[in-house]
Image 1 (cartoon, rainbow, N blue to C red):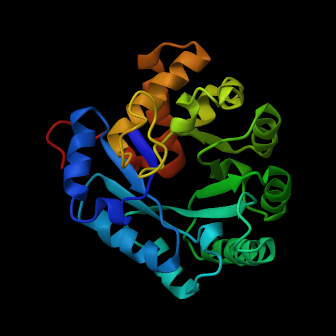
Image 2 (cartoon, rainbow, N blue to C red; image 1 turned 180 degrees about the vertical axis):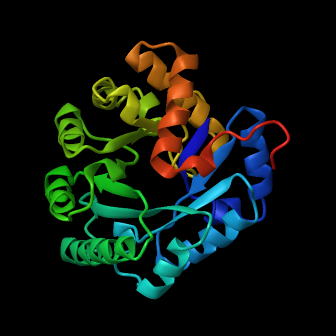
Length: 267
């Protein structure tokens, strides 16, 4: 399995990333993607990924960091790193009042414009989307960006069936976290049933959102993505082993062949 979204540059993992990845590998989670939140974090994420063969990174500015300095040249440099597999996470977050909606939108639109330029220069990568209570605002912006809908993944999906239909109409992938396992999130489980089997992924978003049955364990870690996958199998009523294989294939198809499970003897 692959944890397609975690934040291993965060302070909770300082000095123990190797241990965390070893713990994940011990339960079959062979790869993880550490997601950046600022331009400075993107450089740190790629440097961290370079130290661990089965860790990959992204380059992007999170909407809740839209009031932080943005160095677009640094972000492009991170995006060109061999271990960088996607842009993001980027998007909109209407849950919090700060940064303001105007700040978030300005950084989002600038980021999408830069991604179009970088794509034209040969840095075509999929895009990790953060969307919290903002589907009606965000989906039209992405649709108008000129970037292919099937190159977006809406991570940590917490919407309902109407929201997921908007995302699917765009052509995007949908990724689920431990929220899927929470008793108070039946709408997320209902939405999970609607996503085509070839467009679904799982993640931890660690250090946040530890899933049941390890809800009280902090920080969340990539090894716990197995519980998200198990909950997804229950929600969809499918065979867990077949689903896990499909989840792996979806992640590889979206993020690239480098994430394919290594063969025995590979580093």
